[in-house]
Length: 434
Image (cartoon, rainbow, N blue to C red; front, top):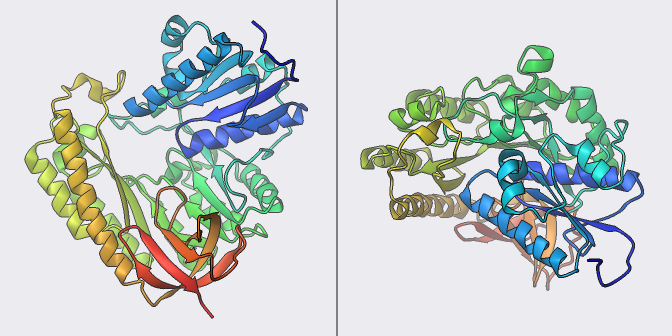
């Protein structure tokens, strides 16, 4: 059935999941635009491409519900075609084809040329770094590698994204330069594992050299590191962080757990002692570094004693930023062979306990900032406040700085120097410093 209006083909790209998916959607949109296609992001269009997430149960559920919603719209004649791509499609294609046959076509994470063909476009190899960014204009995600070689027991990402594959330094620099020309001031480097960068191409961990190249890009003021792995961390990265003002004193390093028994079962290749030493070495090398981590509670076999070890450790380490997830039992992972034996309500209770501890730590650390001055970037205006971030905060996941917009005008995307006047658990209030 044709849609009710005879409109020209407009392609609506819908993005679910993590920053890596945001990046992939932006590349897809850049390719479509280069093919003179009309493309929008999460607005109305008669052709819909859903970039799905297949990581954990909640994400899978959201992806399936979104597909069903657009298939329903197709049946009602509101859209003409529905295409599905991304991680869920990579991981469960045969099941999806059987369960939701009314989708026009399913594509995996590496099938961009095929998806473009289905949309009447050609894949243009020469478009290095050409993409339509969907984030606020002042920051953009920059993916430096795809896939993962780590054997973590709970993680399905290698199933969906394949083996680790680094992008050459020169290609990343070209992309960074194009972003800077478009007004991007902050690059957020992403990969499944930043620390593995370069091993396949240069036969050594080469993140430090990449950073040395990126700091030379004019217009970029902040470079932020997301998703580092704790084993084999290249310590020369910290030297560059110390030396180069453009590199934010910030590191996102998902540690997942700290009980030795759980770390071993998770196949993390480290111990409580080694992890604690690594964090102390970080703090010694870059004294004012902000460390963000994520933890998993309720992993198979996690005893009350394991959990107490984790809780005490979180209290001791006083992370500036921390997120906590409940374990999700994922088929075809190594941990799927274990019994998912921690009841759901216990998982949720444990996650809440960790976040309770963290919000107290965050409150205490934030109180120390009152009276101090910080450089912030203004991301947006919301109600009566301009919302900014310091170099110690990543978008969407970390603290924000609120500045009263009734008293002063600030330009979004620009930097300002502010003085903190009040602090809550996760938000800071500031006035412009004079």
